[in-house]
Image 1 (tube, one colour):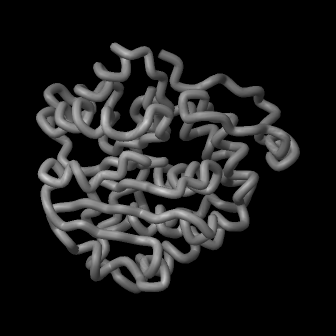
Image 2 (cartoon, one colour):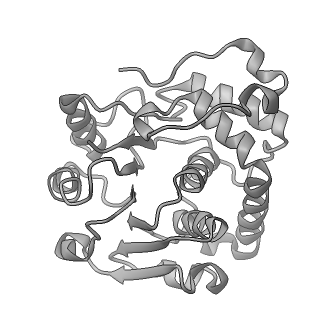
Length: 258
């Protein structure tokens, strides 16, 4: 399966010019080049959100446990900016790091609403009111018991919850069939290595995607180090390379449901 398309070496010279004319299609067509184009297109807004998130971490310290690394969070933000979804569903919030990135994209788009689900509610005290008010609905409880609360008109699906195989089987059978075909989807904690861990959510997901011939994009340093290296060059040239948090562990995958 193709994880990304190779790029010409010239892309690291004059990044804005190299990518300014590129367009981004569905997630099934996502490449390292199209992601780079999004970094160029939204660089000023992304810079502001990066500063916002960095300042938030400094203020909160250990009370905020950020799960997504910089690259995963940024790509999530960029895709949400580009696709402008009206309804976003987030399964798994933990302390709210991903929630804040999603809400920042909704805010900057000026349209959309996030529906989040988790069995714990630490996120409620972490997400600032200026991001959440009018844009966010949080439901506490086991999402497996709240399937009816997931919108059938979901425009973007984000999953970062229980990483066991049982939960993976549940959502590929129940959630994926509930939301519309063509829904952009991202799932965290898939590629901690070159292959998903045995008996894990990631293993279930990869088998499900392969069976249906659904391609995916990953910025995982373990699975696709070339992608991370390339995006690192792009970010450096755009002045977006100062880390928000010290992490290079990025096992998320992005794809489109069909």
